[in-house]
Image (tube, rainbow, N blue to C red; front, side):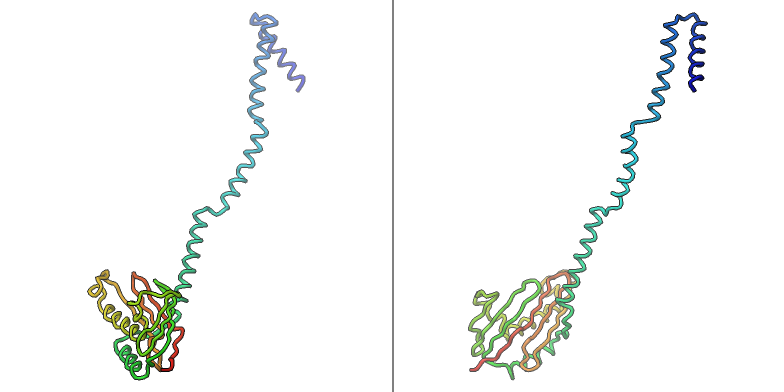
Length: 231
């Protein structure tokens, strides 16, 4: 390689001399021909640091592509949350399968209460659904003497609502609305009311009640305590 380099330099100098160039001009032209080769060598070799970064880049992008995107995480979280809500709703309402409320069942329960129901009693009711809460009612001589909702005294004109006769009135009104909600309460066309109720076999009071409305709030109550009191 060294011999070939020397021969090529001598050949170039001889060629330039033949063309009438001086020694200084020949040297400058030879050096000028050497520079492009060095530039080409540098461009081919490249920057070592840049080459190293380029070689690392595919690995980094591949690692990032394997990570789940934010939208994927959000979608998974939403699905899990929806499943939890469905499970809670099933446990909250559907698990307690109640008989369908009919006009005949309501009248039979009212007759049982009229015959066997005490004139003095206390009753505690748990509300679920749209307006959850706990209600406690005390009745003396068929009159509501005291009532609380979540340990607060509500307006007196609402006291009769959660006595046993008041609960019967609510069921009777719901049965009428369920026949045609659009006509009775101007509900949206296609609205359906499903009413289910379980009555106490001894006294006849509504022990558990569930009103399910398509496109509307659910109502559920259950009597947690019923105690006849002495006269």
